[in-house]
Amino acid sequence: MQLVVENLRKTYPNGVRALDGITLTVGAGMFGLLGPNGAGKSTFMRTLATLQLPDSGSIRFGNFGSGASAGGGIDVLAQPDELRRILGYLPQEFGLYPSLSVEVTLDHFAALKGVLNGRQRKGLVTDLLQQTNLHDARRKSVGSLSGGMKQRLGIAIALAGSPKLLIVDEPTAGLDPTERHRFLNLLAEIGQEIVVLLSTHIVEDVRELCQAIAIVNKGTVILSGDPREIVATLRGKLWRRQVDKRELPALQASHRVISTQLLAGVPVAHVYAESAPPGFEALEPDLEDVYFFHINTSERRVAA
Image (spheres, one colour):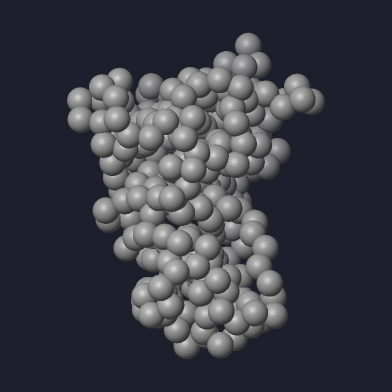
């Protein structure tokens, strides 16, 4: 299965250009969509989930053989109902009836997904509660759940229709570390056979889960590919050293500083250069360095 997006554009009435020609091909497995707040990720997700129309572009989903141009699959913009039958969607924020139990809520959504046989639906609900580690909480009211448990219920709801495409938007924002890791492990289990698109601004989520990524800024894909290969492009070109806070303005004026991080309260500057600047030591790059480098590069390009 593949999701093929070509030249997707969306400008809101207030003039904000949320999508500016996004083109992506997403295959089976976990795909990470990484970008800062306001990059256009949520607009992109809502468009893929058929909740809003773009101004132009195309979206296709299916088995295309030699490519989407060969025909077949679902034309998502022309056939939104076809996609909704095989879509699971966990938005950044979602509302549920707080007084209903977890089990009743999940049963209700399974019925909405078309599972009308009572015995079949009961079995499905039980399986989903087990899969999302919510079986012991099945009789709790939704309003009493922790943030992480609500997110797991959201995934259970998204999985109720046995989707072939799963879209999750900022799923770990606000979760404590234990719930975050539990949720990421759940996503990793789900993303074995189907297309899972994970949108986040948290680099660590993508680093732990995804075999392919795209970095988005200002409605444009600025980089995509295998994260390991992307990280390798910066090897031997990143350097670091501790700096006094008062040094930072001068350092930023004289060097390509891609990020600064605090280590025991002391700033550590990460710098991009073809060879080691005086006083700096080599830095083995990771995905966070790649992210900051390419976001900063795109910002500099726009400013120029």
